[in-house]
Image 1: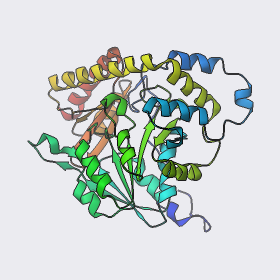
Image 2: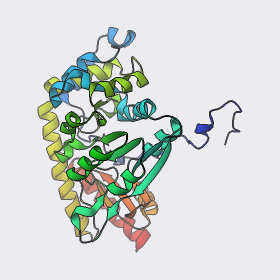
Image 3: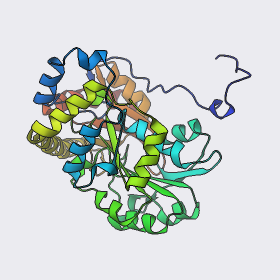
Length: 360
């Protein structure tokens, strides 16, 4: 632990470097990326990239990519902002709309980086435990909207489908937040392709909604770090001011354009495969006596006692899944990325003996 620098920013005192404790293993199912690979035209575009794409600066604000994304989602190009992954968008948006000391509120459990981004931007974070009422499916793993609104937060964060639970937020709950929020509403849709539903149409109803998307999951471009957001032009302009120019590298932009123009059939095919495998995996876990949570994403979250020890036992067998100890309203759980069924079989063959070893 280094001694604190006298001239360092005090807001960073509680910020630690991100460490997912992800040592290399033969089969890594921890990050929910596309385990079927990269779209073919995007891959060819990367292989044939001209030298000038690397030696020169990229475009200022990715205007060509904005136009392609706008066409995909049925909005105008001035309603799109791009970034170095959806993380960059979330960080920049907090900086754009939150004055130091103001409050960011969201449901828990949810994306672990949100409290960290709040700290990084000298904002305060308040997590609100989600609703989880047994026997009431519409209230299972849903945000407590009344409690969120009662915080009077400047920024409200919703993640749908949620990470790490996979739960899809009911449409009427999202609409209530938008109608009554004091400030800006971030709706993180990193996994929306696997759910088949989106809140993008709600952008037309409010100037305070920002929909955050990524090309890391369904599009198989996680290593290129490419995210974007959709909102009213005045809103996305503020995010763009916050993130600055040249933030999307030229290789990422060209690969993304290739995928959007030529690989959408491939993307849709592999989204459908992920959904099929997700449900098959959930069935297999239930057959083992486990109770995986309903998921609308490309992963399955399954409550498992002593999840850290089980995860370590699986790593010893060459398979990594993501442990989430003591998740609010859930308890210990493992999050398992879906991919080709052969990989899922290998994971199940590691999980069964790990469970016996740890939990008997």
